[in-house]
Structure formats: C-alpha cells, structure tokens
Image (cartoon, rainbow over all chains, first blue to last red; front, top):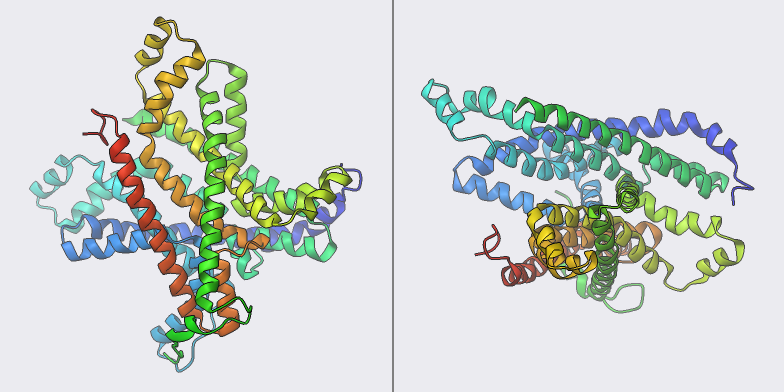
Length: 230
Length: 243
C-alpha cells in the first residue's frame, strides 16, 4: 500500500505548506474569529436591546447567514466585495480586493452570525440581578455592558467560542473553491503539480486532524478549569 | 453601481442545451436534496450505532465510539471528501481501485457517504447527550423488569432519547443540506455549482447567486416547518419541548 509512497514530496514542500499555506490559514482564522466575535457581540446586543426593529434586523441577518452554505457565501462575497469597496471608497470602478481581504470579509461576516448566537446565550446566562445591581449603582447601559455583563458572558462562553474557532479553522479550507493557497490549497497545488495526490492529501488531513485534536483537548482542559471557579 | 442587471436571464436557454438557466438551477436543487437525504440516512444509521456504543458499559465499545467521533470531527469536510474521492482508490488493491474509479455517478456516492459519515459523528454526539440526559432510573427500572440491555435500549432509552433530541437533529439535518455544497469540489453539480456555472456562462453573477440563495432559504423554511410539526407531535410531555 505504501510501497511507492513518496515522503520526499512532503519534505520538499514543507516550507511552502507551512510558511505560505498554514500562515494564511492561521492568520485568517485568528482575524476572522476576532472580527466575528466583535460583530457577533454587537449583533447579540442588538437582538437583546429591546428595540423591536433592531432586534428584527439582527435576527433576520443571523437566520439568513445560518441558512446559507458557506461555499455559496464565499462565492457571493468574492464577487460582491469589489463592488462594496467601490461604494465605500466612491471610486468609479469596482476596486481590486486580494484573496486574503476577500476571504477575511467573508469569514468575519459569516462567523459573526454564529458567534452572535453564542454571545446571546452568554448574555442571557447572566442572572438579571447583575444588570439590575449595575443600574442601581448608577452605571449607564454601555457601562453595564462593558464592565458587568460582557466580561462574565465572555468568560462563561469561552469554551464554546474557542470550539467555534476550531470549526472556523476547519472551514477556512473552503477558500479552496477560489483557488487560494491556504494550507489545503497549497497542498493541493503541490499534489497536482507533482502528481502526488495521495501523499499530499493524507499529509494535509493528518495536520488538520492533529491541530484540531490538540486544540479541542486544550479547550476541554480549559472548560474544567473554568468550571471550578463557579 | 455599473452592474448590468438582467433578471430575465433565467428564462433564456442555457448553453448546456438542457433547457433554460432556471431548469439548470432546479436540477441542481434536486441533486442537492437527493444527496442530502442519502447522506442523512447514512448519518442517522451510523450515528445511532456509534452514539449508543458510547453509552454502553463496555470499555471497548466506548473507545470505538470515541475514536469514530474524534476522527470525523477533527478534519475539515473538504479534506474528508478528498480522501474518499482521490486517495481511497489509490491505496486500495489495484483492481478495487480501478473498479471504484469506473463507478458512474462517483461524485454523488462519494458525497453521500462522505457527508453521511462526517455528520454521523455529530448525530452520535447528540444521541449520546440525549441518552445521558435521561434519569438513571430509566435504565435501572428496565433492568429490574428483566429486559436485556438490547431490549432496554430498544423499548425504553432510545424512544425517549430520540424524541428529546429532535430539535438539535433538525439543525444537524439543515447542516447536512448546506454541507452538500462542499461536494462541488469533487464534481457534484448541485445547486451552488449550478449557480456558479450559470455565472460563468451568462456573467450574471448576482442574479445566479440570488436565485441559489432564495432556493436555499426555501429548503430551510420547508424543513424547519415540517420538523416543527414533527417535533410537536413527538414531544415528550413534561419536557421543555413538550406541553
């Protein structure tokens, strides 16, 4: 089975795979989860704000994003982002957005819907005495959120947020459909150039598996440590 | 915006020669639904077995289930489909590999099995949580009545557990439908792929993707509505979802 397995093709492409591919994947994962968390928290606050219209808009946004496949959303934004850029900058032509920028916008906007559901659950898990006490102390709405509710919600939801980030890490492989050299894209380019599909795809699978396994193990450890505080 | 809108494009004949662009999208929709249903059957069947194994007292059974779930959960679906589609025929004995490569509709079968197994890990976790949420007394009472382990699962635990996990299973089914779009990378011409090729043929990007978006939303609404009826009918009285 592994008689004509060419380990050398992996060794030769290690630099490209990790310095180009994995760097792209990890940067995209990190920035998109950060952006997704910020936008997601804002959306969650909109939904819980008590303003009917804001809540409806946020709800529709979340429902829309969650009922579309990520691949379709990636295609949407790949074509849409240049026009959005044109609209924002007021230039006369659709502007050129690179592969990284386009994917970053896509994943931030898409993941915001999922992060917002997590943060909404987190905010709702805070007992109503907390914001009531904060108001009694004379804190404004934004101070209550900033100093009382959000830090606790974030802390309670940290394991879930990190698990979602692991899912995001795996989902970034879908930028393959735009032929962007993320980790999988890089592996696939080498695989097709050298005709070594078996080696490259098995290696990519092993690396994804290893990273996700280690990360989810760490999250489980964190979960038990956080649970102790309560 | 200097984009040229043309909503009548859907009624123009597509260069594929099989009808209009609308027919093209609808045939993609049909394939999406077919693939999703096949994958869901596999996910439910495998996931149920694996989920039950995890709750059995046997160490070995529990370990097999754990390994299954970790294996299918810790790799991107796209990578798993590549493994099934490109790698499996190569590492099998030559004659088997050759046979695999010559199967007609290979992308469809690969997608159904690959997505089915990917989702089976999630179904297994849901079922494990469902069985775990039942009071211990249920299993004890079943044993006290003289039921064997198999009978306890068949008549006591599983009927309850499945009814409790209906809502999360609904969203797993919706994920299965959405995940079929990943199979366009192995050549399955489902809804997203049809929208993409419509865009390539006609250059009407936003019309094509809007149509696909609307169709996905429709599938979601139909599934959610149908499942809500089913959930209401099957809800266990006394539980949150029940009355």
